[in-house]
Length: 375
Image (cartoon, rainbow, N blue to C red):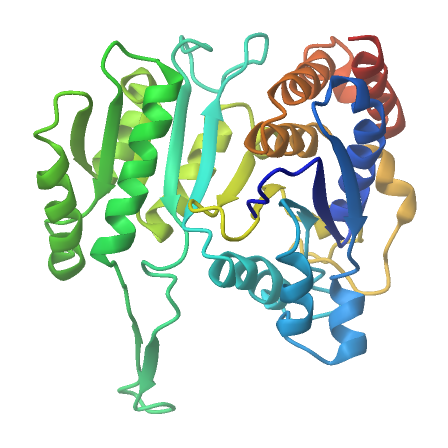
């Protein structure tokens, strides 16, 4: 949230569950060593919004009390939420992550897809110069708007209907934001923005995307292109070097960004910024690896976590780098570009180490913190 003439940053931390708690602790440790790289001091505050909190309160989503507290902050760092062995799958994600996105009007899900130099690509003959794009995923509506119904429930004629909502105002604002991102990146001589949808099939929602595309494609200061979603996915793999900044609908962006995470080295590398464009509410930043209950619990024959088999000793298997990258993204968002760069390089130093895969969590965190202290 914008605070004129502020003299410090207020950051809300929501560790969440399992992996989220672990990686947020790693970020908090690094945050202590960042002070001399900051323009303004950071005052962090942690909030216990997780599975325990929901079960104790008997709630399914954050209410006005929690949201009013969070809106006072300049930015939010979210570790990860959810524990399917203790609460219904999706409850925490809907009740915290999606609730904050909607209530704080975080229209843009900003997802860098960047293969860092020194990190191996999953694609033969593609390197860091090729895989360097940003996906601006619409974050509050699309096929995830929540509308729909069941007809003829319980009969052979039962039908599930899910609504897709695409509003002109939101798609236009999202595209304007993407253009500014492309201009700041300077990847191509003329900033390039691809609008991704499926307007040849989704004719009603597609009219909105076509309208915005046709309004912007006449501009000379930016290269606006359109591509169908399925063709875009193929080109992400075959020709990732085509892309600079991408704008797309919520569900399509969900799929494309997971593919993007693989292109950049794996889910453990991927970060997410949920951006409130106008500054009226805080933006929220998170690694996308989730709570990974399969790393904390024993599994049944189908690979599902088994209740009652939690093993805290597995904590040393957790990798903190995506969380460090996410917090670096948060720092850059609040204007602490130098500190964000230092933290990003600290995480990269870990990833480039020849023994990285075999290092325990504590060693990785200490190496990152030492880099920050010495930088």
